[in-house]
Image (cartoon, rainbow, N blue to C red; front, side, top):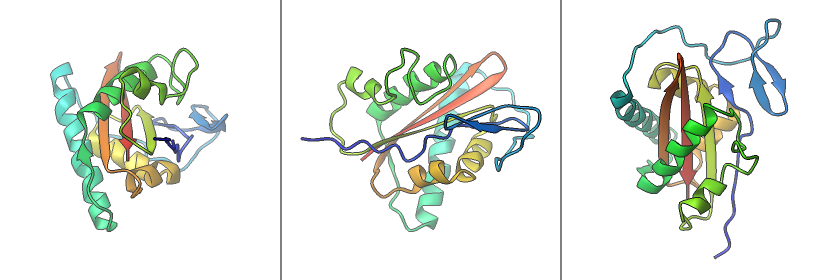
Length: 174
């Protein structure tokens, strides 16, 4: 079966006060601003709470999909494994490319995930709550398109804290 991989967004959201567009990524600067939700909440979480955060992101996305008339996603163990790998990689190299320079979708091959026609990824950093990251993704047209695409029927979600910064990933399959 031939696979079609769609990456509807090449922009990456970071929760900082200002951004500048550079090579399809948003990177912090001190002189520019962009349309992005900046989190103001402060939340302390422990490693074992990532699961609750990921589940809440899943609930919020499905609420938005239902509001938009799009079928709810199912939570995929396979996509979740990919999202968990990608979120940790994003904490090292914040990009849709993996730290070795390969496409983010090569993680699917590594995990022998081949039962999809479409795949998409969203990344975010700096948001401290599920509500904050979902609001940030929905403020970005490309990320929003991924979350509302009828091409996807499954998702995996990753949350990871490195130092004092939170990283988030979504891996969509359809």
